[in-house]
Amino acid sequence: MTVDIQPACLGLYCGRTVQYINASTEIYGDCGVCPRGQRTDGDKICRECTGSPGHYDWLYLGFMAMLPLILHWFFIEWYSGKKSSSALFQHLTALFECSVAAIVTLLVSDPVGFLYIRSCKVVMLSDWYTMLYNPSPDYITTVHCTHEAVYPLYTIVFIYYAFCLVLMMLLRPLLVKKIACGLGKSDRFKSIYAALYFFPILTLLQAVGGGLLYYAFPYIILVLSLVTLAVYMSASEVESFKDLLVRKKRLVVLSSHWLLHAYGIISISKLERLGQDLPLLALVPAPALFYLLTAKYTEPSRILSEGANGH
Image 1 (tube, rainbow, N blue to C red):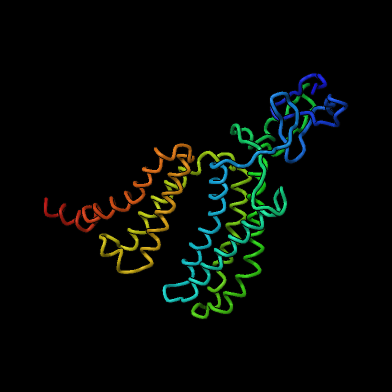
Image 2: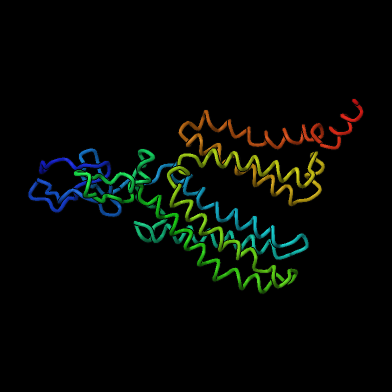
């Protein structure tokens, strides 16, 4: 097949769409923005994205899907109270909402009706911020070539958050009203109110920092999971293995953090060399073990008493 030779497009993301094919020659349109689901190739021609997300892309989408679920669980636990029996049902409902939202999001994405998606390959950070690379050939007129070069990794997160919010508003108020009898009337819906705050924040975070999150999320997972585990164990006064076994809730929290540690390690390795990377999962319990072995030496009361005895 031959191509119709035309002057090259300016700008990093401007391209020419294929208007039609005359015999064996592709005829192109004017230089401009590529349609949704396409991005430019090396010749500045808009080509349809026919690939599928790689392992790292799915791990990124999994991270963005986990964020609202983790925040749901945190605020449910925060506002449910220690004696509330409704927390478990709310946790399960939040898991159901996010799971259904993820499945529906995949089903409505291209190709519609299937649990997989076609995508463009992420090449560099600027692919997430094409609006910053609109060229101005004469320094007066701007050629607008903003499009989703990382299709659909950018917009699919917004669609998922929208479905999460809709499902929460449909299911959670009815559930809370039925089973949250142990809470006061003013406290029953606080976890829902919290979601109405953090969903816009997550949406803004994706809109502004989606590209940065794409490259940094494995390290964000590791750092935050380590910090929150240390804070939780300190606040719960866990200083030995015996303290962990006193309450099942503590084991659940510890297991959840271990899963996050493992997810972060797998994301950093990108599942490229399983033989070399899987042994790194043995490091997952290391932070908790280190904390338990050293907690008794860093207890403030002990440090103060030893300091007083020294004087």
